[in-house]
Image 1 (cartoon, helix red, strand yellow):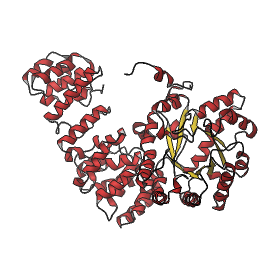
Image 2 (image 1 turned 180 degrees about the vertical axis):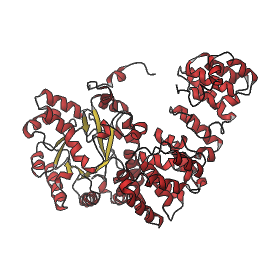
Image 3 (image 1 turned 90 degrees about the vertical axis):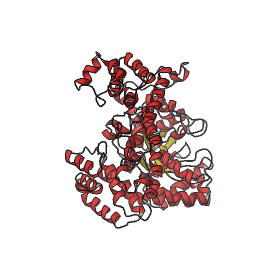
Image 4 (image 1 turned 30 degrees about the horizontal axis):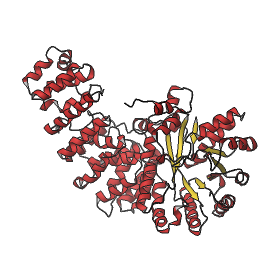
Length: 283
Length: 305
């Protein structure tokens, strides 16, 4: 089975065109312990020489990525971004990986920062990258936050419950979709359900809409009267919110939850497979 | 469609971005400069450079404006030798970031020995990286400082077509143009250049190699310097083609030599940028007429939702 590095090397070289020789030579030099300055220059030149096009992975490439790291997806990656992550992986540096990562992150431009964080699932010594992952989550650049939160198994595999919950909450705050979050259902927990219900109360009090995706993390823990009352309210408001509430109620273990959606059109859509969390429109 | 090739947006509000976008500014250049008070750590300077290549570029993109920047050690802070030495070590790393269109703004402030040393060192860096140069000319002893800047650039064997001499006035423009450099003019109230004077200069010199900018920053300045000057020039009978040159085309030609600034960036942006870093310009999307002062309505409204 090819390693993550091999997957990326194939992906990059197959899109490098006339630059494949240059890429191969650079990677060889980096692999033999070239100074960090050479790494910086390669990272700077990658978009200039390889372009910034979407990677647009083939089915085979998707499968290879998934095999190398379960949950790792190349969706949303760009050619230059893949080359940058690849260079980091092959560079035989003198310092621990997390230190080199920090140094690059401090001076990264937006596209580099996105690439650096998309690479999280394939870096060595993942347990040393907690601080760095936290810095990325705190970024004010939505695409940098999404480079961690979306299509990335690192949070599912390495975040503790507190950090996981705050990532989900921030996603809702900054208007990011939840469906691309890897491990959303696996990592759902009662504390997150509580936080999200309180967030919904704040939104209602402010007269602002509640994102229907929010209810996805509430449903499995909606067992008491108060939680069901919140879903009842979302259901009564109709539209996308009602669809989200209906999906959440369908996932609730409480028998009364099933009764609340009985006879509603959303229940038919769910039963017929026409409505699920991935098809639900964000409000 | 305008370019403001000198705007310190890190000091400006979202109202300014809205107003600039509404007035037809599609791209701007943020030169690395002094931020109103001296930095006392190399690290704060590094973080500043990192914000102008990162956060500020993203912020501009949200308003449909393409943001570019120049990287350099400014002349004021060149006088702090310890800081200057530290910053110089970091510059090569930043100069290759996405959207860096020049080394700048560099040059003289009080024309000290240290200013001269770091000006020269950065001219060499620009040569090594094949980047254009943006030169800040001094406020005091301006005429001599401007001539001296050009002498030094020639001494370092840099082609004047790669260099924009900025903050020109009536006293410096003839020499700047005659020696083959691009001549920038900063429409900055009370100090550098007014737009009525600018229009007179355009009547006299035409549009070749002249570049208009706002230099808006943390001081009393106007982020609409370029569109307002364009409007005044057109009303004063300056040819449309000349106005387009000085408020758009020349800046693109000069800084485009970096390979980092192309008209396609805003006319036909890469898909991946559109999804992540750039929201697109409403004027280019909807084709509506540029207006000046679009943010005013929001500012004067009572209700905040």
